[in-house]
Image (tube, rainbow, N blue to C red; front, side, top):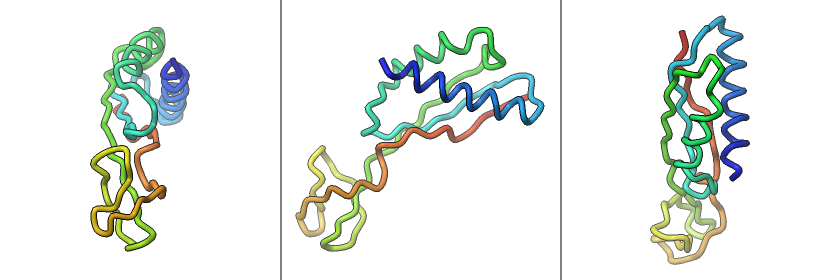
Length: 113
């Protein structure tokens, strides 16, 4: 369950930032997870519930936003969102292995006080 390690790292980054901003509490953490990241949202939420205890994020909420897969077709030079796990361009029917978005995990916002 690599979600525990991901959540530990994310929470540490959030806490470090909050402390630098002289915050005493983190109210909300928002992260984006790409559909190809391999992260299971429910496992990440569970890890967050356990890891936040005893920190300035103890009473915070976690928002998770999903990022779709976006590919780029080198043949027709168009971005596209594949319907399935076969990244076939809908414009020219060529297959692409050029993934622009969908593998990332990003901490995008914090609400602190």
